[in-house]
Length: 85
Image (cartoon, rainbow, N blue to C red):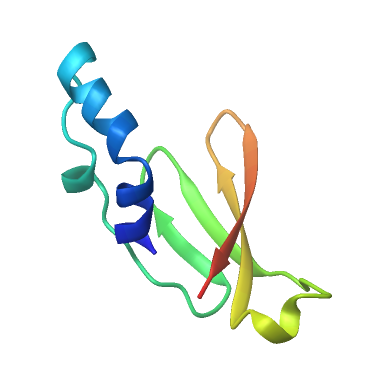
């Protein structure tokens, strides 16, 4: 899935590297597959938790669906839905 993401966005990524002086994105991405809910990572700045999501009606076709919760010391919470295959 990550490879396809970079292929799909290749034009935009290349343009930003060339015209805006951005660093290549791919070396900055480190994929970690999740198969269950729980603590994803924690450091002094942030804690990331994953929870299983009941993703009907597509649930039979998805191996697992998770939502990510990000907690920072400022108590700002950001939630994103992420589908894991």
